Image 1 (cartoon, rainbow, N blue to C red):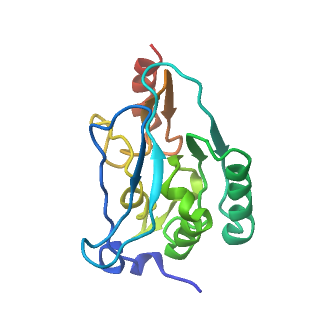
Image 2: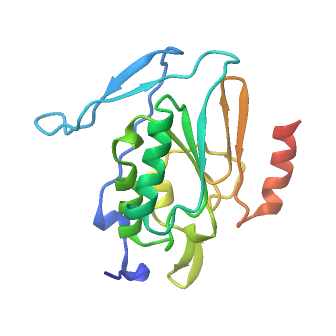
Image 3: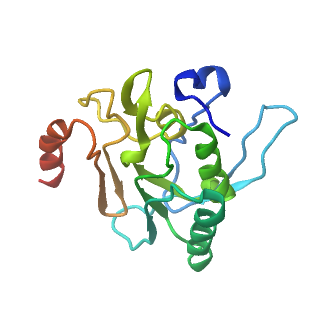
Length: 195
């Protein structure tokens, strides 16, 4: 199967939905499911909110999932989860897929993690494979921002919003950087975050 990136229009192909959970109580187990409000509902998912203040946490750090998404990536990430089902989040350090705008590869990436996506936070940053030719320009995957709801740094150019960001978690500061685009714009911001 091959798809033309130039012919792909995510607005015509699928619907993306984002929900922000607000005003949640720290260190609390929540259950949720997704549906149409009537007859069609997903299975139940559970997640625990972060503890307030400093506290130990665990995470998985992975990168370069891009090849063999269903044959290799699925086994790796499931083994990581089986080893520690209490992980708080997964850092995805770039190259989630091999071909930036290939919808099939994104579908396989999400399918490989299955229900784990519904229960474990994803902290992704783009790698060079999340960039590709689209309408004659090299750009971030058209699937990136619709699929991830990441913190937005308002001062950044829209081309890197949700690719460079900060997350504070139980006394630690996680800083995601985009090393492929507008590095000079991120440098003073990074210095400010580290200060």
